[in-house]
Amino acid sequence: MNIEPHKDKINMSLQEFADEHNLTLEMHERTGRDFHGLPRFYCHFKHADVKQGGCLYGKFGQGSTEVDAMKDYIKEIRETILVIDAWAINPDDRHEIVVPNLYIDEGNINE
Image 1: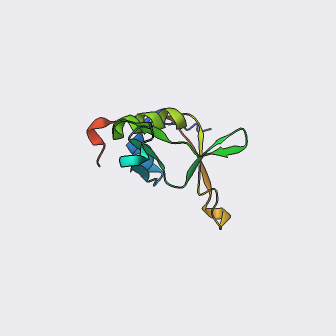
Image 2 (image 1 turned 30 degrees about the vertical axis):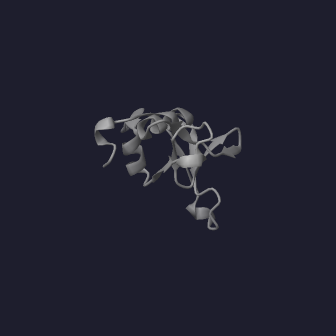
Image 3 (image 1 turned 120 degrees about the vertical axis):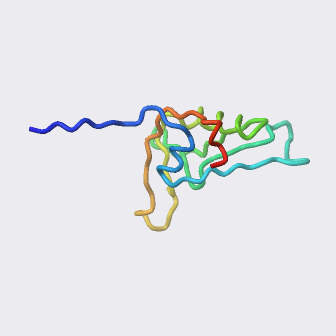
């Protein structure tokens, strides 16, 4: 009998995770009157919802800088299930991803 160890990535950078799953992180900047006391930046993965208790939730990271918004987003999605294209017309386009313990690799943010 052959036993092949299964190596899950327990820790992964946000950038690696996005690249591995072909995800796009959308970063939005609130300007002028859009603030209303909210942080300047907010972000999320395009077409991604978090699945919790059988329901889907839109999660966003917010912060005064882009990096702070990404760090907040990591807190929101870490160790959850992301549903990509949940509302797609073709059900084959929908897929779920278990999110590992993510972190920011600040040296590679713009790659």
